[in-house]
Length: 83
Image 1 (cartoon, rainbow, N blue to C red):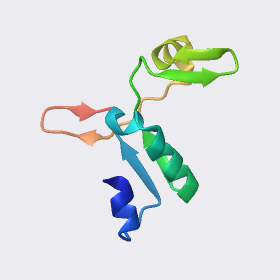
Image 2 (cartoon, helix red, strand yellow; image 1 turned 180 degrees about the horizontal axis):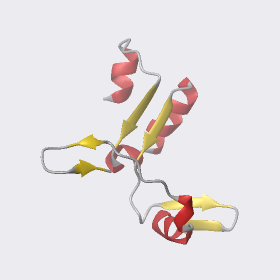
Image 3 (tube, one colour; image 1 turned 30 degrees about the horizontal axis):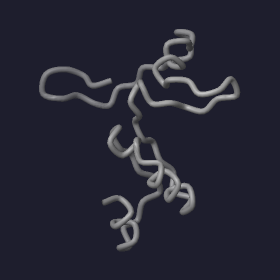
Image 4 (cartoon, rainbow, N blue to C red; image 1 turned 180 degrees about the vertical axis):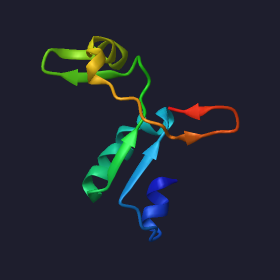
């Protein structure tokens, strides 16, 4: 859907997507080939290639120090703030 929209002339400097989109390596590759910035969620069990070999994304995130995270508001929903 994202690629069809871009092919159809939709103007986008960047795109975002949930882990369904993040699990599609073809989408990431196509966005990179186009020079389109992206933020795509991935499942915590997703294997990420690192210098130390493949690692689960959740394991990498758990090892980051607390100061490595920044909580940012995404706005207010009907019941509470979204972070």
